[in-house]
Image (cartoon, rainbow, N blue to C red; front, side, top):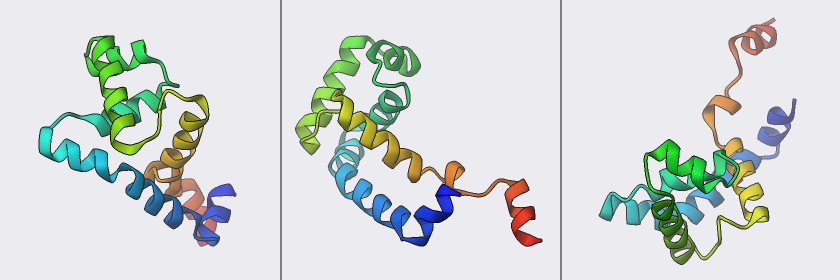
Length: 113
């Protein structure tokens, strides 16, 4: 399984570390201002970079989402609206999602046998 292969080379640990380092300025900003930039970024990425869908999911105006994405770019130096950046962030968020990485009950029982 791909997840096991990633775990075996320390990929998840490396991705988690890199993602934390990348997002730390946004997380610090969120702590100071309660602005929800990390949530905005994760939602935007999970919705395929769709500003309107992100606005609807977060109960915001689309201009507020656009402003937050601009602020994210200013804080971390990458444009989340760029397709290649979104692809990389999608992969990173997916690899660090515990629900994806933790084996399902069926997989756990198969591995125990």
